[in-house]
Length: 168
Image (cartoon, rainbow, N blue to C red; front, side, top):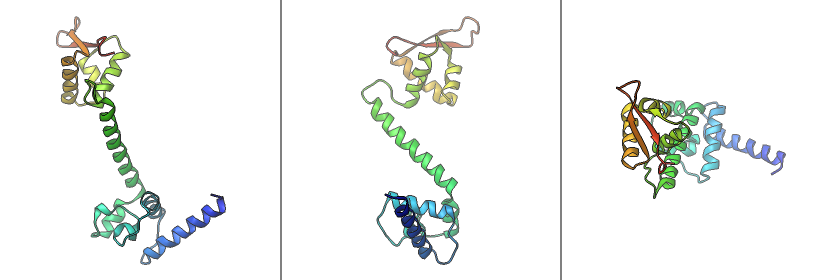
């Protein structure tokens, strides 16, 4: 598409958004949400998504709350959440048929692959996990034979862990 055609199309879209919202001034955030909606779902309707160019899951009540929710920074945050969910879904598919259940299992092994050994606490810290979640990951990896553990010679309260050949 040539630049002039693109500019003409953008102007037409701004005009369309203004016609749908005659009672207020349209902001850049409004237009960004409208544009995302148009590109992502060109189907027309007469619900709030058609009126404001936003996500229909929020219903049609409390328009002021919807306007705040659809600000650009909130849209970006929402897209990060969606990306995280898609990533989690695809990671599960990629790990299907392996002894690994979660992305955290995989990243723990990846961390251990680059270290001779670390303490359990260090691994949990490197993997950016809460202690209970990290302990569960370590327990699963131990049970699968992907890592091994032993008492720390310097600190008797601590245990060291390392990746096994099977884990590699």
